[in-house]
Amino acid sequence: MTLPFSMSGFRNSLAIVLATALAGCLAGPDFKPPPDPVSTAYLPAAPASATETVALPVPWWSVFQSEELNRLVQEALAGNLSLAQARARLDQARETLTAQTGATLVPALDARLSASRQKTDPASMGITQIPAPPPYNLFNASVSVSYTLDWSGKNRRLLEGLKAGVDYQSFQLQAARQSLAANVVNAALRKAALDRQAALLRDMIAIQSNQVAIAQDLHAEGGLSGQDLEQQRLLLAQTQALLPALERQSGHLARIVAVYLGREPATAPALSLELDALHLPPKLPLVLPSTLVRQRPDIRAAESLWRQANAHVGVATANLFPQFTLSAALGSQRTDIADIVDGMNIWNLGGNLVQPLFRGGELRARKRAALAACEEAAAFHRQTVLQGLQEVADTLQALDSDARTVSARAEAAHHAQTRFEIASRQQAAGGISRLALLDIRRQTLQTAMEQVQAQADQLTDVTALFHALGTSW
Image (cartoon, rainbow, N blue to C red; front, side):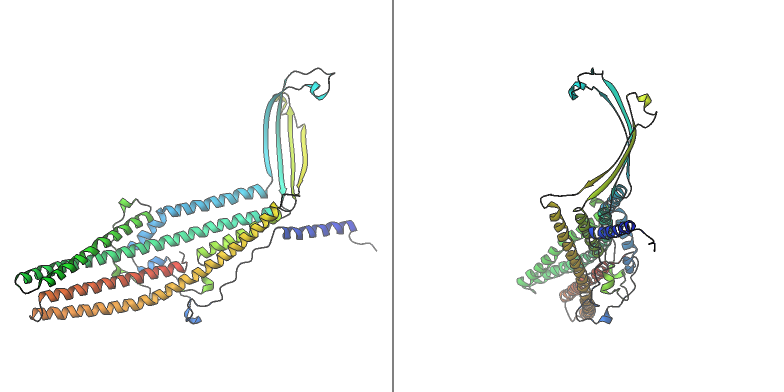
């Protein structure tokens, strides 16, 4: 009986199979995506059903329904210099990948042209019977090609690492865009709150100045003690001392916004945002933790670093094994440049095998270092996931606290206003003094300032939630 294949063919096929399998091992382990978080909620006391997916607005800052905010964020996304740097880093990573792809996946083809003048002395080579020829020109034109076989998978892992680097820079750009949008909105909200508080504070100063004037008249008539007069003056001075700090913070935020927009601080935009004109979403967006890790760009960036570190393990592993390079050249070498195009008279074909034998433990140490770097990247990814979950949990708890605070501040403001209206009628009827009425009005303004602060905290925490969820657009 005749076998359908020879024993030598079987050995060759087996060698190919073994070489292919060995190449996969030499290239190092394939990257395995991390598992999703096991939690189905962000807070310990929250039931699984509390974390329901709610549609995210696109873009998220449009939820406030403010044309001014929309304009500021769009201008920042177009002109911010940090984003310009992030885009340049992404372009650099892409071009580096393109360059390395061309250098490893296709053979290198080079053309060379050289000219030299030479002098040969046969006597220097022990040939004394032949007289030394005169100096002559030597012209050389050649085309060479070389290619390093990727049998160990080194080049594949190298490109995989560079691709992960491109992904990392892409996610970093997304994270920078999200952080910029949140920073612009936060700064605008905080400035609006400060400006409103400063306006209320100026009203308080005007009221207290009026109180001091009344107190001075009463003191001059003997109806008020000197101690009570100084108390009124003290309250006025204390209130006046608060205004410069508010104005300084407001100006600082305006300059911050200018830099976010890519402007010089002297050209800071005039902001006229009113907190009362902003809208809150009827239902805040929320996603499951398993969705969060696939949505937040900082978590995706950390995973890309982990993938890159895993690829570097493959490169370090492949460096322990032989590297095969094939090369060939074809050219013309003449003593007269006019004859160089007559035909090809030189060629070479060769192969190069390099097997590291002794490097003082360098290569194995580099592999161990790559493994340690991969473990570090895995731990960093896990830490980034935990921090992302923590940010969402902290923001959810803050929003719950904000809702209760805003409700309490609104009720306090309502009672303060009602009290002032009653006091106004009493003063008109002669039941209380003008000085007492002004003091009640001052307390009403103080309550309004606290209400503004509660509104600002709630709005900025809503912004923080959008940022923590990694909302894109």
